[in-house]
Every structure is written in structure tokens, then in C-alpha cells.
Image (cartoon, rainbow, N blue to C red):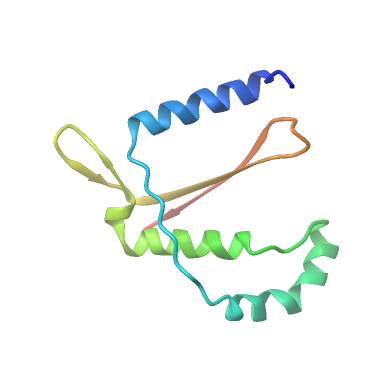
Length: 112
């Protein structure tokens, strides 16, 4: 066993609070990645040399999600006092934990 550090404990608490406050849904679909792979493969070596890490599918998936949220604004909404609030921005955050040291978060916003 390993005790939770402060960041992991806080992350767990916030995840539980999020699930209690917001509906959570899981949906799965099959996706043809051949066009993404055709765009990624010719650039991966240059990308790795310039940035020091691999060009993965994550930026492609993230861009597709942001574009879809801009196209379908009701999927980018929150609940207010008896109303649905449609947002004019799409905010996307991705957090990763490197070597179990705590979360690093990259954020971006796009106006719709």
C-alpha cells in the first residue's frame, strides 16, 4: 500500500464532488483513424525532434472534441436556476500525472 499525497487526495475528493454535482454519461463509438494516421505519420519524426515528445492521437482527438462542442452548443452547456446556460467558449483541459508526482494541466479556450 502507498498513502495518497495531498494532490492525489484532493483530486479524488474533487472527482467525487464532480460526480455528485453533474450527470456523467459514457458513450462509445468506432472511429476510422486512417485520415488522422495519414496526417500524423509524416510529421511524427520532425515533431519529436522539435518538441522532445511523440505526436500522439491526443491532439487530434482534442481538436475534434472542441470542434464538435462548438458545432453542438447544447453539449457545451450548464444548468442554471431553472435554465440551460449555453456558453460562448469551449474550454478544454487535459491533466496528466508524470511519475505519480501530481497532475499537470494544459488548458485551451476557443470562442464559438
